Length: 343
Image: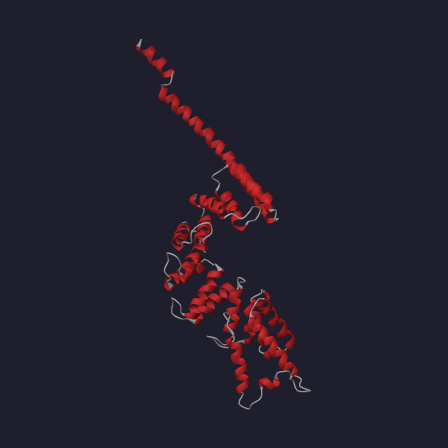
């Protein structure tokens, strides 16, 4: 009797056992549904990115929204949609909507979204400007081990200070260096400037050149402009050949200060054959970008050309060599040397 009842009991699961098996089945089904939903969301994300690259912003935004219908917690889709609202691409610009979607992605742990959210607090986009909150999110991104961008943004925060964050040059240099060591060109350029000025670090021209070179070799126009200036004899031996190389690279990328300096090099015949047409061309490029001093350079150059003596083959020979001791040559060279990327 007891054996029979024992066998019968073994064939009929206890209520708790049945619920456990049913729960496991339901969880398995839910996991499969979630996996399929994520797969569909990923497909919408890919499609949206392709449309975005083709500048079909409206259709791209629709794809991101469709993907979020499949998986409301898809952080990458939330970030893309949030960015669209920030820029007003494919949708009407709306910082509140941007904040909602970017915060959603940031809370899910997406480091890039955390950087974006920090930027929104730093700029006051859709929220009250709050540098302390910006730093909080940038630190969150850094803690995840994501290199370069969070460290650079932290450097900016301490470099300039703001609401809730006290300016601290040494702290700024620390974060810029971390970012620069991960190869972020903008941070490398800023670190070079810091060593050049001795801001938060001991002034060191060799370190400045090192970091400018690293950034310049990655195509950073500002670093190229700084290098061109330093090779005119600022903090290192004068090398007009190198000065020309880096100044031209920066000028061709549209750096206005490098364009003005290149104009002066052509006007003075420093590192290049003297060429007033080229000088006016590069002054004009700089002036077109609002560098008012370049407009003055054009006026002076044209006035001197009109005053050129008859038969003079080199328009500025009389300006550059008029004394036996070379005083005016040095004046010309020092004028060129003084044009730093910040002027």
